[in-house]
Length: 159
Image (tube, rainbow, N blue to C red; front, side, top):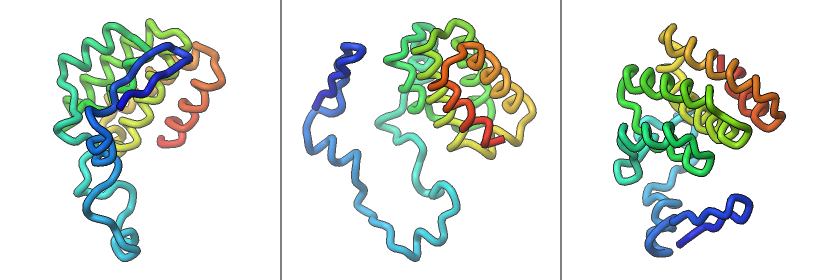
């Protein structure tokens, strides 16, 4: 299964088969209403990144070095297992933001919003990570783009 983005003329491979594609969309454990009442935010048994989808630190660094808008969304698949992982990623994202144009800024803001939304507690418990997020927001605000600003506003609401 492939997805072709006609705007950027990019071809993305989603899965080797339709069955594999569907398996990533659905789980075998449907939740009933009682389970939903117990959940506040993210379900603790559902990992943010499944091991088979995860990217390595080296891959994340390559993506951030290339600073390609078409690839930055893959940062969502970098597994953060500790505060050090989060600090590393935010530091690299900040460097990437300094080189960002409108397209890469938009992709970077989307990835940042996804990561810190999931790791809200980890992000905001530590002064350095809070400061890093604020620094990235300030850098991306300089792009003066209304679409990027939507993400930045959503991130700002998390503070």
